[in-house]
View 1 (cartoon, rainbow, N blue to C red):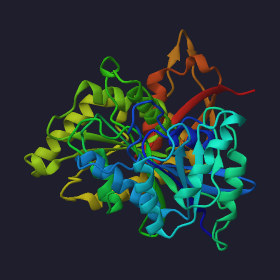
View 2: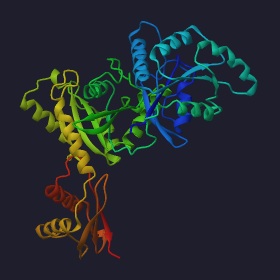
View 3: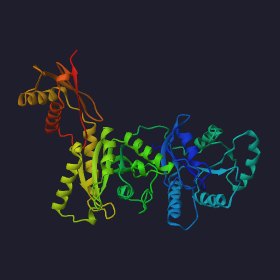
View 4: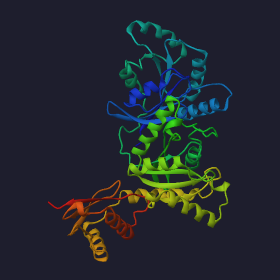
Length: 436
């Protein structure tokens, strides 16, 4: 049974993201005093009184005609449609505004259960000021304080009471999580939308439009996935706004909680130095990786051009020889069908286990083919090996003296393991240990 979905909705700058972070227990949404900072829907899980549910933070509903404001309104509309219960947030310090009344009209039409939360009630004396909000027509207003964490328990009690009766209270999340990273404006959000077949994230030709890591669950070929779109990762010297700093941190966290990382490269601009830094973050985290060359429709896309571009990637990313490369166009969806099989393959290899007996057959054959080196008159002896972990696959090779295991020989063993078992898309680790 699925989890309930709760959306936090309201005009900009009433404290939605602060409350979201309080409920989630960590700083997921960007918080800033600049109205409109949160621009996409943000998903996370919250548990209250044994009830686990999805919480959505939304960009503030703005009614202007500017393109970005229109898209923010569309994102909020999608969140409202997805929600089982809506938290309508207002600000006690500003009272009821015309924008609040417009948001209320939108919520009336949704026919969804609405809990009215009056934020910034930071002390008991301010509680008398909440009564004017009864006029919005959503029943009892719940006074809360995002900055002090006051009143959230009563608010959540009411939210849980309004959950549909058929909603399950817990389930295991077995979905495959993968994130999309890359420089700003390489087409990450367009790629997400192409996979989801809907406009789940804002797409714009303005570099840096996506500032938040956006989780989007979907089903592909019968399997559950969660794709995480991240803000474009800029060079540190070019990160001016505090919100962009949070975006970089969030992209790093998105890598940490993903099984597979899609690294998007712009076919038009080619490989830049910043691409190498971004790739390094994923490689150092030990994640399965798929390299996506986007905008392939805009260049000479014959087989030779593809081969030349692939050779350039292999030359620039020598340490990523295990990563598969996919050429596609997110905009036209050309070759988009080639991506998800590579994501699944990388994930399967990322969690793959090899039987100890089979592994040792391969290791001993490798040693027979290429005898161990001698260091200062002492020869390395490989005794046996075993796999000790997955995500990524990690192997311990027991030897007479780990100091004798040179990097080049460890690399040789890794290559033999890959020749025998594949492990496309995932790094593998080999650790030398002295047998006790």
